[in-house]
Image 1: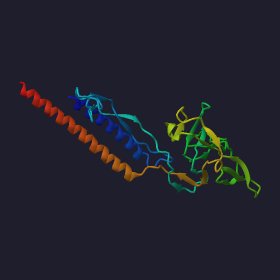
Image 2 (image 1 turned 45 degrees about the horizontal axis):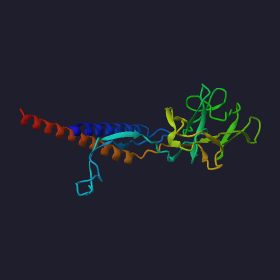
Image 3 (image 1 turned 180 degrees about the vertical axis):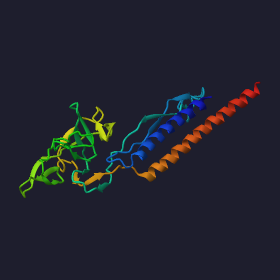
Image 4 (image 1 turned 90 degrees about the vertical axis):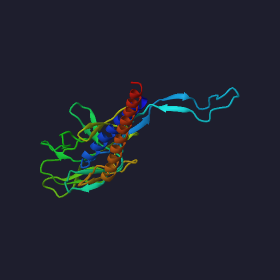
Length: 262
């Protein structure tokens, strides 16, 4: 029976939905994480009787048709790029973006990746790097024994060099944005890479031309709403159970039909 296949597509769709929800919940404490959702579309229909077809020799037209659907398919797992809550950490090199933009990270192979995770540190040479030791762009090096590291809302990094009491600007953290942020491809480690769907990276400065501002001593939390995710999880579980019930019902109907002819 067609219902067996149709219900199986529903079960597969809800299984994927649960996988997406579980990843959202697992990353609810991940800095800068952006939640996803599963998006579905109905499959192609078999038109047993097409709506609008001629119904009789007198020229009457069918007001409705007979269309049998083939089930559901997954078309994507779009990512919500909404702003997460800023959490104060008090760490000097922690930086949060409030608004549009990504930090640009130089990878060992010379390519760039992009992140909302501003958990920065200094490496052995004084460079400002991410948790994997890759430098934020443009590269900024903190002088040895410098004090009072300050990062303002525009991303300018200032320090007080040893032997002085005057603050000096030593560099500026840049931001990058994309026409379609949802088109970025996640690659792990809180990083994204650009794709043809995201558009080309547009480099700029914080608070300028629509870019967001930077907040020192804070980090952006994941934009996951736990209550919503649990509600979605329950809904997906119930939908899975109902599709399984359809398969059971279809099997019982086929069994009854078989017994009639045995």
